Image (tube, rainbow, N blue to C red; front, side, top):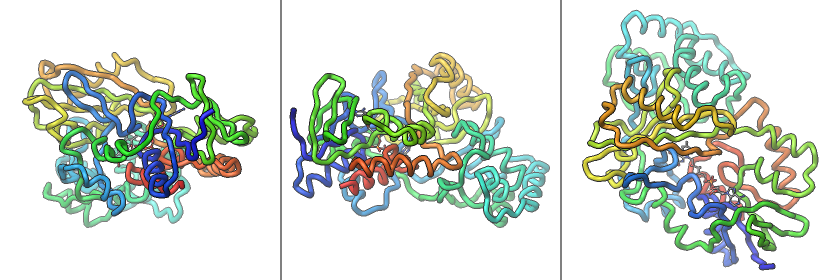
Length: 419
Ligand SMILES: Cc1cc2nc3c(=O)[nH]c(=O)nc-3n(C[C@H](O)[C@H](O)[C@H](O)COP(=O)(O)OP(=O)(O)OC[C@H]3O[C@@H](n4cnc5c(N)ncnc54)[C@H](O)[C@@H]3O)c2cc1C
């Protein structure tokens, strides 16, 4: 059996970050990746000459050590401007600060509801947080409706621990200003979004890929931490001194031998969303937004973005593209690929984005792991699993290894700091 000092499971950005740290420390490491290419969620695919990332992916990394890697690749900088579509109306993001396009009577209702919002000092769940931030009407019309689509979970089941700077806090001045004028400032939590000029988002991590020792098509199926050995699907095994895993915690626990019952139960309670991607190629250049949110319940997608706006390199000349993201809780598919494509086609027409004859193709792909769901009490289950892994000497890192809402820059650092 081959011996490798540092075995890294998973070749996404976290695994690549761990390999970088191993090189800096002068330690031999090999990344074992189940798929035939590296990048994980940051990988991309090509359909009929159009390149699509796996969901939106733009960089707003500000850590110098991450910028030192990403900035080696020439990039475009986009303003972080996005739109929201709700029942035939396009509003700037965030909706509560951009009520201008709504009828005057509706604005009055929403603002009155905001002014009389409940004062909840310590919200027990996300629904309470939303009601106390925005008032009943704004909360129910927008973020609560969106929560069902994006998290596949009622907001009273979600905690508030993931919010951070992701949701703009409501301020009376901002709401009033945005009700009177369309000329509102951008309040998004980052002002600029970076994207490689060529090669898709993955180009940012190509320097790490080029420098790493890797085995592709190597799917780990068993981890024996007592014997310090990993078995792979094709029958081969390796032994290690240190094991770093970037696999989703529930999957990693499945691979371990002799898992205590409480750990298995805690791991099984950790849930994430899965994502259906419907990617659309258009025959002509269409004036598209970089990305937008969709509130309508009859449209399954909650968000869409344009790969060809991110970079023209993502589409053939004189063409453009969109990718729609459809979320659900858990990994059991809710809709067939054809149902999803039909729904997206209907959305494109309803939203006035393009005509049916502009569509060159629609392509479906499924991502089994999207966003970690912050169910109330999730952290206790996560801690049980983390403690068990620590007792076995297994380092778990990355978005699904830490089981956290990490951006790509944070996932890179999570892997880097695992050694
Ligand atoms: C919808 C969406 C939008 C996002 N948008 C942005 C954005 O705009 N900007 C940003 O910075 N970040 C964004 N992110 C976050 C970013 O994608 C993640 O932080 C990052 O890609 C996670 O990297 P990772 O290496 O931790 O996990 P992954 O990329 O999931 O890598 C894990 C790897 O492990 C492999 N693997 C799984 N099982 C096994 C096994 N048994 N054996 C061997 N290998 C295995 C997988 O194939 C995969 O390659 C977004 C994420 C999502 C879901």
